[in-house]
Structure formats: C-alpha cells, structure tokens
Image: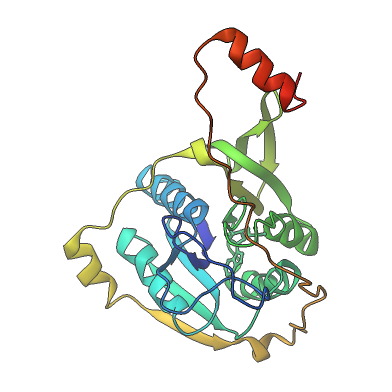
Length: 248
Ligand code: AMP
C-alpha cells in the first residue's frame, strides 16, 4: 500500500496569536511556524501502518510557500520516504488545496490519503472531505482507530456521543482525530538523514487550478479580554453576587 500524507505549515500551537492592527488577519511576521498537529498524527499513523508491514511507501505533500519545505522535512525526519512541495503564495482556501491535492493523487496513485481533520489556523475542517468528493473516494473522517483488513480499511470515527466504525474500500481518504495516536519526535540522526531524502518541487500553476479565494475576510478580531474574578466569603454572598449580575 502506498500512503500520501498531507501536511500544512501553520502557526505553532504554542504561539499566542496576535491580530494585525488593521484587523485583516493574524500577525505572521517573526512567528514560529510548525506542522499542523493533526498532520503530525497523520504522519505517525502512516509510519505505524508501514511498521506493521501494511504500507510500502509514505509520500508527504504540502501546498504553500517555499518555507513549507521545512514542514515536509519534519515529516521526513519522522520517517516518511519522500516529499512533494506544491509551491503557491497567498491565502489558499480548502477547495483550492483539495484541487491541487487531487492533481497529486492522480499523479502518485496512493491507496490511502491521510489528512488532519482540520488545520488549527483557519479551523476549516473541509479539505479531506472535499478531496474525497472530487476523487469520488471513500472517506473516514475524525478517525480514532485505523485497521487494515483484507485490502480494505476499518476506520473508527469519533462522533457525537460515541464511536462509529466504517468499512472503506481502497483508495480511501482518512482524516485524523486527536486520539488516533501520539506522534513521535524525530531523533537528531533522523533529522540529518531527512536532509538527503528526495523532495520534489512543483509549481501550483502546473495543476491548472484557479487558486483565487472565494471568500473575503471581512474582519479578524481578538476575543474579548476576560474580566477579573471576584472572591466571595460565603454561599449567600455568591448567590447575591450572581443575582446582582442577573445570572440567576
Ligand atoms: P482544513 O480543511 O484547512 O481544516 O485542513 C484539513 C487538513 O487538510 C489539514 O490537516 C491537512 O492535512 C490538509 N491541508 C490543508 N491545507 C493544506 C496545505 N496547504 N497543504 C497540504 N495539506 C493541507
């Protein structure tokens, strides 16, 4: 089985995001960028399938600026075999990414594509579903368990109030949820080895996809600052404070 893993370069999850003064977006200058955490889980799952003997090759793809190379190298250092960077500048919406990924899938013909359930920058949760729609493939989203069974996949999904297991015929699309696995850290020797792994660069224009955003970002605003709390001395005081604030 050949696995394609899609990874996005996003603002590191530890960074306290700041909104630009003009409200047009978030500040990206001098901000630490990393692999989207759900995509680390996607890479880890592919590695585990390979270690179990269920997969032969893991290819990693990212669409974005030249710096997305670093994100691909991180996946290669974790253990993926080779990478593909689809170079594209500016804001990419999920539909545009899904169309670019469709081009990569048609060229690479993977049996399984693993994506994160959502990118933590825009929280869209759309790309995997759109890619499955464009390809007409089976999809198992929000996966918390992936099992290979006789050339097919059983994917356990985290749904409201429980778990649902779906059987997928290959080729299939899987998107990862938080509890699927705990991604490994890349060791220093593997980081060095990753520098020599193949990383192919393509230009988004080669795919004939219209990347023009369909949405206009009207405004981005910081959440309201929380007001300081008040200490009360007794339950009675608490009740009258809540009544005073109109909460009971
Ligand atoms: P989203 O639909 O934007 O929340 O992203 C869901 C998933 O799609 C991410 O976790 C990635 O696996 C994949 N993805 C989104 N954007 C990109 C991109 N620019 N390059 C590669 N994969 C992406």
